[in-house]
Length: 285
Image (cartoon, rainbow, N blue to C red; front, top):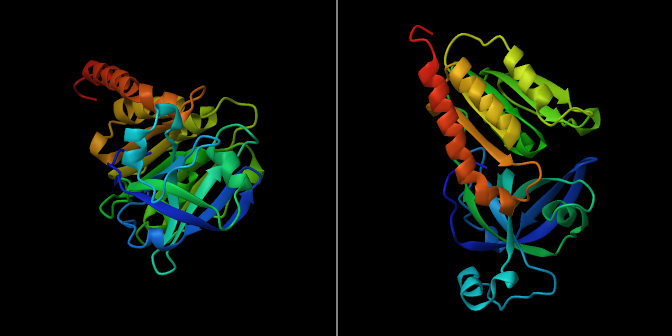
């Protein structure tokens, strides 16, 4: 997710309703007084960190995350999973989250598929750091399924008639969703099929004839293709970091805990490679 610092207060959300949007995307809407005053709205990539108790573990009430981490052994601490805020309705006090669901694998996806209205979950946040700039000449948004909620929320916040090129890679046509925007959006759905994750997305962005003017770009998803696109946008297209929101939401072969523990070192390596490539560019390029 974006690198903004989340609010550390734990909040309680109650499941209001759920809906399967596509074969592999489940929407969960949380509500309740615990969400009152949730500071969502500044960014379009707001995220929350859901707290999942280990099987068989219950926590003293009222729930106090700091006390849990202070008083209980680590194996009884909740596991966190990070999800983008798809929508927030402050009047109804409803928070919408979309989950990629691939059967019984993972933690949050299976939870979203089975959870029922009335059940509750605690979470931290929100964090965030990106919203489409009104000053940009045009916008580029690219990502896989994990970035789709943020891309959808961002499109809804584009300035009227703002040009945007949008590339979303999903497994197949059944995973496409309606995306609304006041902007002048050119949307390309890329169907992965049996290709490696991100391969078709990288190729599509590389093939794009970039419009004139300054771009504001949002590129998120699996870390491998994000790395390739960052290299392309920074060293081949010359886009400054200040015009990019770009990060690996997840990494093949790692759960969130494993990815987050290695992400700082991964980022350091990417930055070193990028600096070397930029230094090697001809001065006139």
